[in-house]
Length: 285
Ligand SMILES: Nc1ncnc2c1ncn2[C@@H]1O[C@H](COP(=O)(O)OP(=O)(O)OP(=O)(O)O)[C@@H](O)[C@H]1O
Ligand SMILES: O=P(O)(O)O[C@@H]1[C@H](O)[C@H](O)[C@@H](OP(=O)(O)O)[C@H](OP(=O)(O)O)[C@H]1O
Image (cartoon, rainbow, N blue to C red):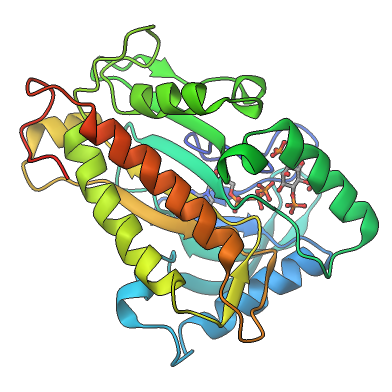
């Protein structure tokens, strides 16, 4: 049987703690997400099961999704015994000290088809966080400095961000040390120029796709500072994750996701535009 462990680099969502079921990883680069036993689990599984054979999804868009390896029944992280897990590509497995940001996209994390109770719960969180204000919220983030100093703002700090705060957090994410008031943004150009390209590619698809509405889905941005410094070819990775609340678009554009994506793009562009010549070796967008 494969040996599984609790991931070190998870930044948001249901996390394995004593008595709590959470994701696991193996050492071959796979991420085991516990299958939730309500419709969230079946919905996410159905999404992944049809995604890679769906002829409507262009190949340049498929790269934004983690690869899917079916389901496996393995020992749950909470010691409760065997439990089915969705087996995915572990997006951070190739990194030793990854910096990771989970950004939940959309000014609404619920779908009108959801129950009243669920909508009430989500709406409260959407109001308390930057979701409604900015069209996205930073659900979790970690930034590992070149001398291995970890900066991982507490969930409570991330819950209530103004536009200015979100901008500062994103600038810190691409700095040598996030734990300072004046971030140096030394990685901003190398990381965000490519992230911007990826987000613009996604936006192009979201402007026309009428297949899915991605409620409560996140963009995961991952990069490694040491690798970025050492290798000219190193780039950040941009992936979509969390499809428990994807619904049929019924022929309509996903304006909720598209709007949030445009807002995030604006933040990234503004950060790049604000870089001084010292901070950037790439041309400004
Ligand atoms: N394929 C993956 N590879 C590596 N890490 C992942 C992957 N999928 C998710 N993660 C990590 O797990 C976290 C939670 O993922 P996800 O949103 O899928 O879980 P969730 O429990 O459904 O979250 P939520 O409570 O927001 O609905 C992410 O923030 C990320 O750190
Ligand atoms: O962002 P936070 O504060 O971590 O809160 C969680 C987040 O809103 C998730 O999206 C939600 O799962 P769903 O979207 O799948 O409902 C989860 O609900 P849960 O605790 O009921 O699972 C919340 O706890």
